[in-house]
Image (cartoon, rainbow, N blue to C red; front, side, top):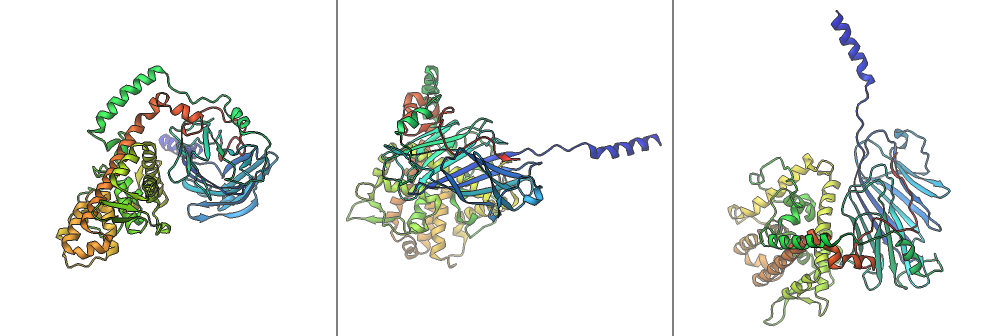
Length: 559
């Protein structure tokens, strides 16, 4: 009887012991700033988070605005647009705030708020416009903003910020850039944008402060500050330091350079796509024992497919994504293969098909076109020369595609980035991906009378490149129907071999550049990156400094 009474007492007491709360996490913050000629900035922020438990809303702090006005604010939870509440009431329950967003106006700025909805994983999108964010100075114009605040409820694990102008390209001829508040990099991209990216998880006091200087004429902002840019820069540089390495570090850098060059010729592809010892992505099946799949998986997203291939340890040894992008650009009409007289095949850029361009191909297109800047025609040896002088552009492209591959998988619900695993639906898409690879590898077993339309053959060529078996796919098509081969790509087999050769050259250049990046940070002071950073040409960022910014504050996240 005593035992029964004791057991009953224990059971009655159990509910009084609280369960441990879920931990709040900010896995990734992606921000795009689009600069309008009138000085406004359209902001799109994507927050990939686990809300944890015990909060009712998510909010962003935007203070110290001066004459900046925030308008056209809206919020999406995934693909679902939330309802505008206008002036936000923070003193409500989670259920009352769910599906709604609004603004808290304070004496020193605003808070952009929305209900968290159900606890757990979310991808929130906050979109708004900051009027008069670009400032007109005496000698230059500028953008000086804090876009990620310190003191967030959960410091982000990764931050990526892209700045682009609506009507012009940003490059070193018209722009200088500085990044403050975090450890990372800043760079000019070949697509005419500027990127700031963290290289380690944030601490509580880390932030992202951007300072961009523009030549006169790019913008016509009504927000005028009668002072020279140097005054702004001097204030921002107080406490800043882009020098991070000492002489001992330089010696280590030399040794690292030797070791990396050694591995460049032995295992050049591992560091690029496996992330230096990263564990394989669990598929839940043997990729060599799957049923044929004859359609295009993962909604045709090459970056998502490439990430699955690379993380599962099944990437092609040649590096297939660059070649796959080139082939897709050709059949979309963005690039043409031509030949003059008895000369080699060259790539030309007719200016057509650009509206169809796949996002995964945009970086490749910009690089190829830039390499052909002289006469607009690109030969393989011309690109080889260009690539040797633009290793940072190549490595940035590889890094961005890896990040975008993860983002594409997460948006589709195929990937859980907090657990670094595929969802059940993601595993099914991966099975289809490897099923397509098996189908293309075994195509000789298929009844040759089976009709496959030219459009699907084009995608088969693209995915053959991604799988590293383009030669095999092309040979099978030529054997089945030589006229269909020409219809598919509008050039003959000899020119196709030239395209493959150029694609492989590009792949090798990307691999080498990515490996070089693995030790560039440790040799930054020797290579001049620190000097380049302090002069606004991109490179490392400064953990300190950045004072005088607008638009920031402290706090934000879940509450």
